Length: 449
Image 1 (cartoon, helix red, strand yellow):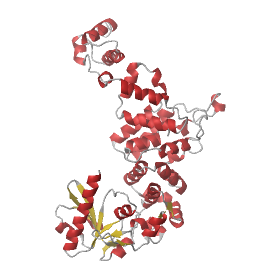
Image 2 (cartoon, helix red, strand yellow):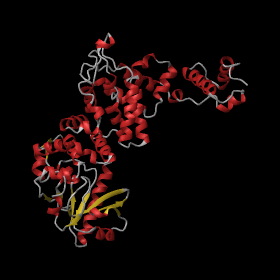
Image 3 (cartoon, helix red, strand yellow):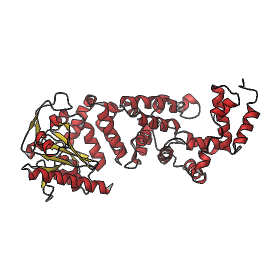
Image 4 (cartoon, helix red, strand yellow):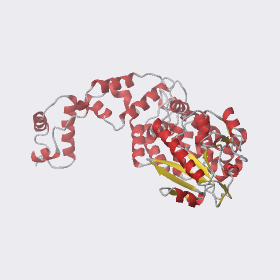
């Protein structure tokens, strides 16, 4: 990873050298400058220049015009991509997403005025490291403040995704959102609906995986954005839980505590699984008075899977991510029964795809409630002690064998193969001969021609 980032910096520097050598201005811009000043490794590098998109594509024939009308060109090399953007001043944004017109400019000072937050409006000369700061970004960086450049309302009206970006940077960096910017986010919260589902999803996924998910979601709540982007999560607030299992408090508090423990760099599917694992609880809540013993959430897993699917579809998740997220919701309550499971059931449980994510979610679930890790330890010890070939043994019989034995394809077919596999996983049968004998004895006259 480190090597790739060094290479990205070298590539950005070489692009700057090439542009400057051809008589243009070229500066490192935005997030990479912010991260370098914070002593963090930038995840990518952007270059700002007065060269027009035409100039850039002539100098870098391999470049890709991703947003040439907005002056943005990608220069790919050695599996990396550097974004090269022409200095510009945007005229107006009627749709709250992209500028209606773009005027290219020769002035870096003019260019930064249209950027989002002061800490992202810094420029750097790649050779000397000299910082060009036209927006007092370094002061805010030092003070730990997220502040819109210029007029906060105008900046947010230009691009409504900035509502979420402001929250994400504040959470990730542990910064405060300055009052005017905060109030502007609150005021415009409902207009997040103007932003495409994909952009909202990507921003939320970053919040969930950058190591400050709990902080990010509490800020989404405080700014009024949470009910706009994820009303199902906002619905968790004040939904009480049985104190004997959940001494920490309501469903929102429990989920928020789990989010605090999501490690930076986790997969988006795992992090969304953590966020949504109890999404079915608000709709299934029944009080101790209703149940006669304690608060219950009967059916919350099934309801959670249904709501989870609605959320995944709304946010246009990939089928792979959706499958992983729904599996995490569907299976999160099974750990409590692990010690009582038949060996065959337990082996099938630990064979779930991405099982380490199920285990990880269960651990966070325990740590954010009763802190009892017995089931977690039991399953981990089982995995450690059981050779993989016993968890996923070679099949002893195939469908062809059953056809040969005279079984009809159909529901019975599956039942027979299932019984053979279970017996094998239990260690009751070991060989093909054992399997044939089991089928003969158990299913002898049933399902035959």
